[in-house]
Length: 353
Ligand SMILES: [Zn+2]
Image 1 (spheres, rainbow, N blue to C red):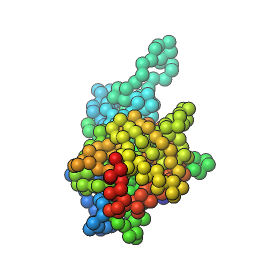
Image 2 (cartoon, helix red, strand yellow):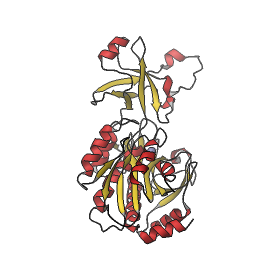
Image 3 (cartoon, protein in one colour):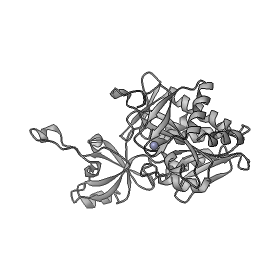
Image 4 (tube, rainbow, N blue to C red):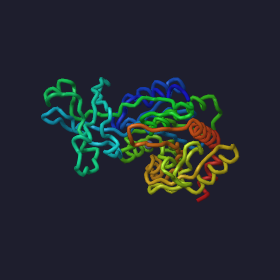
């Protein structure tokens, strides 16, 4: 796995705080194309083969990760937060989190939790993330302010990239969805020397975790015919699971259904055949969530969309795990698809509804 993924997952970037992820994306995109476009909310795309008369193909990950936002400081100096994205409070008890200033100065802290000594004999309620208090070691509200804490700052889990002992799995925060951001960069690198029969807009959106907001404006910018989301989705395999709930090392996720997007019949048919032809491993996946594909399918008069899902354990928590072989399957499917798109294949998919 390329070093760029390690760089990407370690950058903090809660929804609306994607600036530093975007800076990295731009720096890497510049190695592959001179045409880089951005919308007004911050989504960014590298463009290849812009003047093609084939279909406009858009591919995106999302730059934001779940995180907190500072909403206040108690008089004792504890920091109040709200969640940006879906997060369970219990998972964040007694965790090392960092408040980032705009310049990425770090104010480290730990989420307050009561040790068993203090709760013996008492019934404990589940905790909502928004009820957690972050202890940055301040002695008072004024002290916290002196340390640099300000309302509106982002709060991100401290969890750097590590490789498991067998060398095949990668643990990091923000696989959801820096894996998609890295794929966009790898796609630009791989396609810049290919003879594409489509125009390609590969990049990443903002604010996916708070309701697919960046996808709406990015679609307005690119006006795609086809959109491929690459996004991490949770696996249930370490909790029993079943054949449509996602497993590590079983290939990319063919997301045939989620409550916001039923996979386009022509697209499903096309991807299945192409994956089988090229021996790319995939698994069917049903989700209760949504990806940028759900929003973009409704742009203009409709867009042919698919999510090439990356199986990931434990996302929307302090950290997560992916498998090297699934990464390879996602990449193979993405590259194969983009190379296959032309006027004819687009018409073939579009008419198969
Ligand atoms: Zn995601």
